[in-house]
Length: 495
Ligand code: ADP
Ligand code: GLC
Image 1 (cartoon, helix red, strand yellow):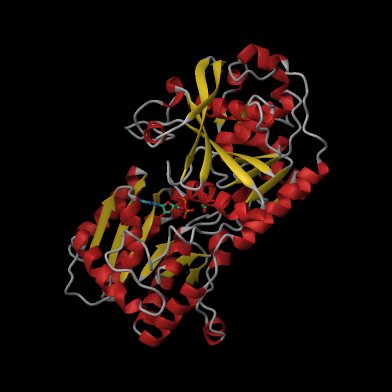
Image 2: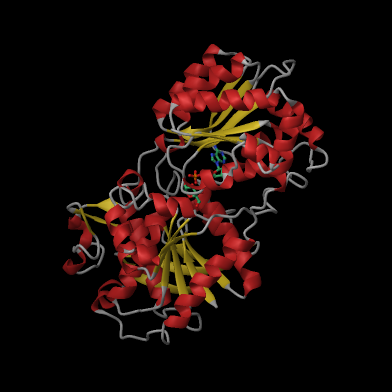
């Protein structure tokens, strides 16, 4: 089976968060099941720089008004189509924001073009390569199925929601610029509270909708977590399901991680101490102090709740521990964390930044990873924490609630506990969970058991890849031969 995956980021080429980890590792897990994935990604500078050899396949003279070409390349185990469109992607900054952190003003066009190129591929623009199914991810590629259905291309589409907070909401005035007919401004397509939403268009036109944990799949049906989209999701609940993310066991492996000064496994956990010493040095913390290191590696946004850690980090320090926060995001949250750190020199460090090797070192050298998310579709950091023998302290929400087993008495005696959960998700809740974790740390036997149980927990992609494969197979079986419908007017107008 041939899959076209359409994504705005993919590890190891371009990453701002867990989406890249998932789109980079799922294809590898699907391959042994006979599923060949090729991922379509934008040709950002970071991507173009890493292409050593790329084969041009087709050129669009005017993809939403811009010249663009599709290239094919392979990077490690990944097969990639790269949409090379300098007017859209060749600029400083990241995939979504400029150097000052402001959204690129033409994001609507940048990601609509990505989706339109995907629809072209699904519709047969590449001689000899037509996918059996298209897999889109989040709002950035959600328009793919809208474009496909507009032109009568009925190839099945799976849309995965990684984060409902981002919906691609724009003025309805843009419809014409998107090459879409006025009828798409309707309840059962893209109309969204007087605007249009790329994500809603995808939710209405995909054949199956998945999200990245069963708990989040239930949560998003409620007004509290539905972010305005719960009505649409309830209407489509029969095609919605949750499949929990796996992790890439090769990229995140403490026994072979090139970013760790000292490698270790479940039988040599003592070696973590050497990584801890390097970590403390790197973050300018007092190495003579014996207490545990509680760390967070995260985007610093409201979702992640680290403002609550700014208010509770003193709890760790009062119990003799140290705190490290590494991340980037909202200025106010960064500032709140920096202010707390300034009260505890040598004991708490906050570094604002984004850097893969440092993220690995923090997992390799910390004792606990703190993740007090207000909502969390799946979360990968807590899974990396488990694999690296860190004990996660997490809020009970979304994927966190089903991947971490709270160290209550029952779970401890059943020898299945892996971390600490708290609910409700408040500062007091977090403070209490930190206190419980610190008490557990004071009992070396209990801590070692938690580490052991966490390191043995299974979060490979195997089971989840099988679930995706079943979703794909079911849709491909149901769909007739791939439509060779005559190109719609849209196509003449834009390509
Ligand atoms: P989200 O995708 O919502 O940010 P996840 O937990 O799913 O949350 O994935 C986060 C990914 O981003 C992980 O791979 C994590 O290591 C990485 N990450 C987060 N912050 C940083 C950072 N400051 N530097 C490097 N990697 C980071
Ligand atoms: C999103 C979510 C996160 C999830 C990731 C990958 O960024 O916030 O919870 O793990 O996507 O699916």
